[in-house]
Length: 336
Image (tube, helix red, strand yellow):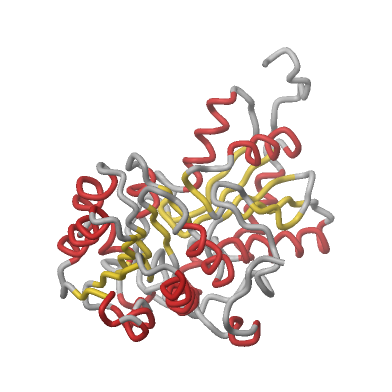
């Protein structure tokens, strides 16, 4: 049994990932006085305000100035502290992007950027507040670790784990209302290691964030109604990515589908495709995510359906992918 949270499972099942983040960070603050928080006037919305209520002298509000927030976080890290900087994902990766790169990543500082309202979770707030580029931006920065947890329980584990990572860390969570994937924290979690949620031999779905639960639901329906054996990998860490799990899936199933709440350019799909391409092995491969466009406006659930990253869309795409031809020769012993 992994280290548990200070609240019970019934509370956690009702809490959004960002709420769990705030509570876990507060717990960590009691154990480690080097942990500080920095906010750009969004302490309540990102739930880092919980930390501030417990340690008001250790939470710094720089106002609506995300670029300054990243610079301040870098300065705090230079003094030996472990800053957690929280804002909306779109502001973290774009408005404060230069400071993240030059002040934090370039100096390899232990700043932990916890970005909320990621992906399409801002829904009706509009395309300008949707964040479908952050994975591509952050994983392209040297020294940066990138994690997209599937639910609140993974968020709790990732927050604890990131304190032990010496360099910069970026984690994206949603706005809230995302249903939990796990029932509790009784599962293995390690940065850089995918979680095999469902074994299968016909096709592998590799997903991150809210799409993991959708992939798992789709796998269960496909198995029950179509007899399709689907492996589901929760690729919570985008960088460093679990190359071993990816290649095992390629060798075992020969068909790979990636699903992400992100633009299909530069995100999870491209990260997985790069691993496969460099291996020299062939497979049938498809990426599901936001196409090369700015997302439309509407409730998140409607957007997930539009872009086929919900369970129904995943089921349809799996059946299409199963119909694709792959290399008949499955003996790769001469291709090593």
